[in-house]
Image (cartoon, rainbow, N blue to C red):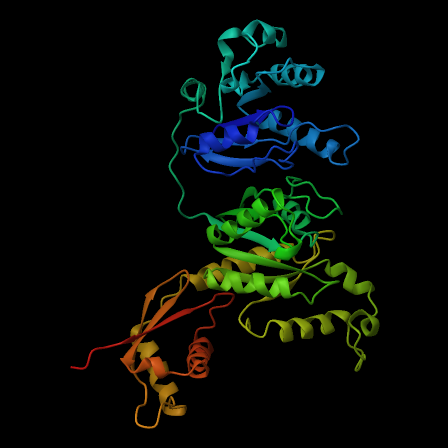
Length: 442
């Protein structure tokens, strides 16, 4: 699939152009300069991949070197380069360098002059010194859509068949938990900017890889803080996008910091993943630090039987996430590479579980055994009567129990039925859904 890269300084409107072409808000758009720090990618009309690169920043900015490297990578990788400028401002030496680097690459280069709707755009003669041929200079407005028909006409139109077998995995967690480091380790290339500063990743970053013949797409999301601690504006947008990534993904990796395992926010995120019906893996990051930790002091518990810090951590997770007994826990280190490959194995195992279809005869045998061993309680003169159960869907597996007065079923019996099903069909890392339907009396 052809690749088109948007390059240019901050606040030139690259993110707005991407959103206009994609017809949805993929890149974060705000008046604050430098909103986009990571490469943001979108597939446009199933014809080409559009990359919105981070804009050039002040040289004193700690992210400058990484951002410049990403722009260079985008120019090197792209088939078509869209050098984006604000049409209302004279270009400076930074714009000239971007255009020069793009032209030097030998790729097809277009000069996209944004914000032409403001009414004070400079004439085309002011931009010819950048070296781009006049017929390849296009005035557009990402706000009104002006000039976009002309822009679309010069972009690749090759159609490629969509792949429905792609498995999407989202990395979810708090800021600075190690999502970007794990993302880079999984993709084996520094796609995301890694920093000890919280909140580095603001957009959903993506990379596609193949593992054992299966196409995987990894989504690196912005870290979520407690709602009361989120900044107005950019961070709120990132939080919404992270929740949207949960909906988009097939399997979510909930990253838990091994140095801060107790977090109500992590538990809340786990609940949202379950409610969305997605596969889930508890990924404990920075596991290399556990080897150096003193078990007694690390979790404030008395050390008996020479237990390790990892043992205490697993006990804590089992207690804090007792509502997730089916979720596998994987201790991982992006720094050393420990268990990175094992994550892929778990993803494939969970994907298989999500697609499991159980025969109706098997389900009803489990239901009848559950009724016999533990009859459901009811009111004084009325008792719920489950009659039969069928599976109606996969991804997630969904079961419908038919019977009479099922509204009286206690939640504990419903949980008991789920345990009985999981005894035979574990559905590893997979929430299973139930509906209870009262049939009309014959």
